[in-house]
Image 1 (cartoon, helix red, strand yellow):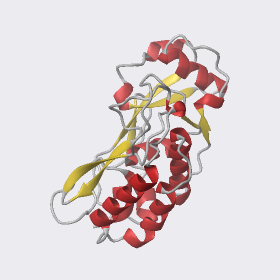
Image 2: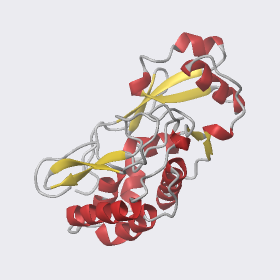
Image 3: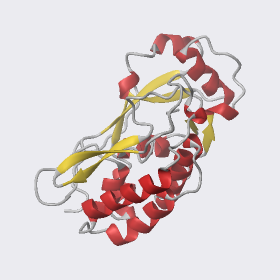
Length: 244
């Protein structure tokens, strides 16, 4: 389970592809400084932050109660221009740009629906067929805390293992999960590099960057380069160059 992010980095899609079931935490609280409605692309050899502006509202609202700004049609056009200017000479620009045009111009202001649509379409483009569900559609009662929430969701699907990004290693207790019959595992993307433009490789950018410099078959290969710990072997090289 992860919060829904707009055009997240490659590791997000690796996690979806690695899972038997993936849950979008659309009912989790929106975090202003997080990555729900912003990400980074490559611009003039450096990471550039792009933001999808939201309608002003209470900061304690969950993601599925937030809306894109009322002027988002203009903002979408501006973001598309930024992407075009940044990647016009990228090798797969012609293939990827029509997809991005459709996703950015998707006709809804509902933030969670907008993100869900983009994630599902990206998964379809990459031939990732993992079932994706919304957290808000699950009947899990009232969890006592974050760990209990995750546990109840895993138990909803009668699963015996939960895969969480490595960033949550301080948040979750393996013994707590084990006591409830669930093996807690942590996912980490390997160090990956591919040829961008001239200059040093800029890592951990949006999936937009990955698609601009790699064909679908190359991205499918990149989806396999991750590690899972503890106790699960998934041997892959730490660093590869997908396109030479």
